[in-house]
Length: 148
Length: 148
Image (tube, rainbow over all chains, first blue to last red; front, side, top):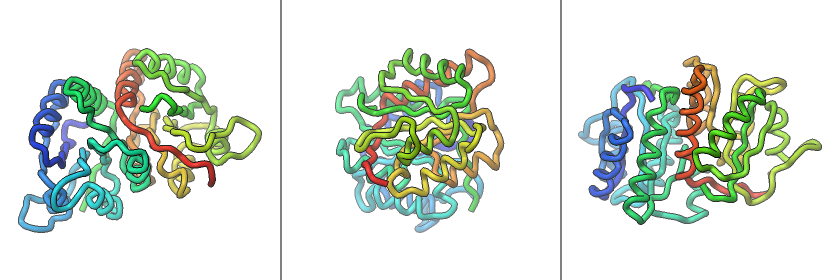
């Protein structure tokens, strides 16, 4: 993945955010990481609603998205992104504790790139994020630029 | 990835296929791995047509898709999968030597999960496939029902 790609994390559990960030860094992901603590914040950022910082005119992003979040949940966020003619190109990886077969199907149907279940076990969770990080740091991984 | 899930590899170069398969297995992937030598074979399998092997209902599939293949190329395969209401949920990982921004954008527009450019050097290539394998072992893959 290009060093300029920004990793967006939408996750209300700050402990999980820190753990994800730390383990991405451990697997040599040096990209800039921005965090959002609910669905509304990430929508404000991506769609320029509200007074929050807005995404740049031309940049590449990958989103790690939790499902259960206050205000606007992950499902609404994913649907809004995948219905937008420009933002839909952005890869979205679901990172959730919800392990339900029909949920997994539904999110892939809506267009998520991958669905990952956060293991309840701490060391397994760390390992899963490290594997994600090693994958994201692949030189050949191409993330599209989103132009507004 | 669930043990029942099947990894489909559409790759016309048999040597490349064997190398990918072996490397995924070394990374701990123990899922069934099937090869399709061109786009037509891939579509026949997924759409349950022709005389060859056919997909089974209610199983999980993930596709690693090359672009340059005889008969039908990878872009057309991706387009047909993502236009089908039932098959569109299958995660498609583009794995190709084509490193062209227009093609990369087109594939993201059509709905590929990620786009990975194959490294040219042997060791870089196996290293990349190893990392893909580690990542696939921590993601969930959706089931595809039996009917078109």
